[in-house]
Length: 431
Image 1: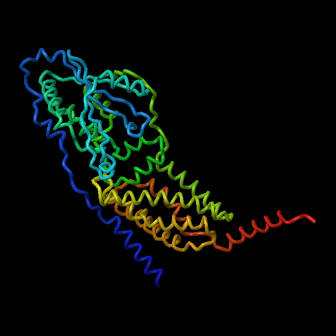
Image 2 (image 1 turned 180 degrees about the vertical axis):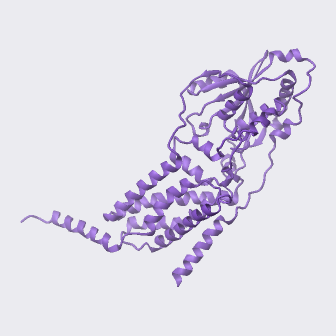
């Protein structure tokens, strides 16, 4: 009776964790992109049109780099005039005393920064990154309007904006500029082209160099990034924006530096994850079957501590931060901080082999039931349960199955007794 009641309570608590996300305090975007671009005119006639013949604007695209924050590439806007070349960069942030706290709560402000264009390009070349420069065709009125906008945007009181990886970043800022200088034609064209991909699909392509980073970020992000994108929305990535602009204006490639070619082809995340999970499950099964309980406990402890920490971070981000991409994340239904119970009992097994671990068994079975329930709901209501969490299922289901259905104690005890008997026979002195 008590076990049944405990199970019901745990199921209820687990369900509540995924029931709703409480949005963090909405903070102001101090410089909203399209609203502020709308303050300026990019069409009509320029009084001194001949002056702008010597003014040119270029889209500068840097390929992904080695550091995590450069994995997705970078976009800048270069202005070339008789006075020199300036690079406008919307991807700059500063390490203020509150930087990490702001980052954790999803209130990270970026600024537009200006630098000498040649210094920025030379740095990218020295990092062995591919650099491509694409001139943006525009008339005198568009150039004049853009120069006025950039002067306004770089004023100290107008430099900050609230960063959002998918919706407001260095590439989307330049994308909006391209659209306004084209009189809205670029957006109208790009929104009419469906990519057949989602935010998750596109961003995962750029994280294939590190499975743990890719899997963790995919785990933390909810269903809001799983809708199909048009090309305009997909231009949150520098490479996609560059390709779209060249296609729209029918421009040729202009590669300044080839750098090291970035290979985005790899095994799908779900397949890589399944291979890793099955390998871990097999290792754990063999360790348990042959009675290596301490080592079994150690490996389990690492796996479940990681899972518990990741789910705790997700819980925190869903309920207490402005990271809206984590809201309403169904992963928390079947991967939540309850797994810490399994982790702590695994740690106990390292120091006290043979200790009863029934709590781990019950937790694993409950979470396994919740996992299967979620899978069934996704099958029955695919339009409501759109979150692409196949990789999470691939990782967690084999491990839940192993933990929820252990071998009979007699089998494990017989293996341990055999090993003990063999060890005693080996150590017995020869007469």
